[in-house]
Image 1 (cartoon, helix red, strand yellow):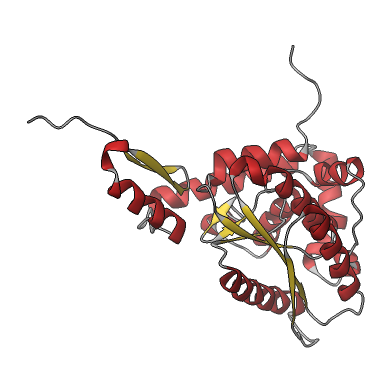
Image 2: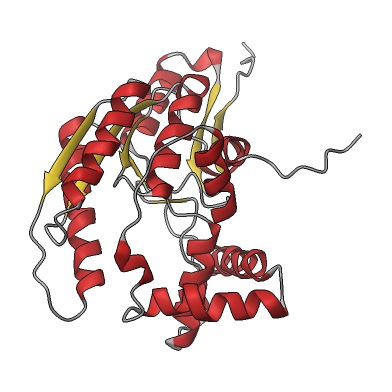
Length: 278
């Protein structure tokens, strides 16, 4: 009998880690945590799956110095991290007010996360983007006149960035928080209609959902297809990251045992055991 219930956030994240991201065992991941609903759900779900995928997690928060409440929100993230047994650290930066504030804050946040990941010895940085975020980003690109290649946004894995919740809906995140009684905070800037993303989220997307209830899934499918087309046209070289290089060295040290390494984007490098004729 087929269940009528949609998959839980935990199930969606597990599938994404298994089918789309395919991390090598013992990978170290820096989780970008702010205290907001999305990142707290990611922290909790990833902690529940860490042992199954043999992952080491480190949580890190970045205070942009833009809101006095940010420190308290990171305190909440630290409390949950401690309860889950995940080490937590934070960075405080200063982003000056002015034009293009969100883009500048995002750029400096990623810079801080990269530094924190390097200091923690983490090969990966995970962010809490979900399918609704991805759909909004596709719409933003369309409104700004982006071409097909610019629509392949927010893949599950790109470079050393992971998005374990990218196949989940915002509703999945809310249900997870409610089910597990996870306290979280909401950034008031998310409702500030001075920003294009906020107008898309609160004005455009509800109107589109009336006309097409599956619009989020449609836009995500479009992003996936554009990524596939881009990969077909420009496959480029497949570089090995540190964990993959270490795994390859082990395979080469014992070639008779064989093995395989997930390279991402669906590519797998296999070393098969063959009997060599005398």
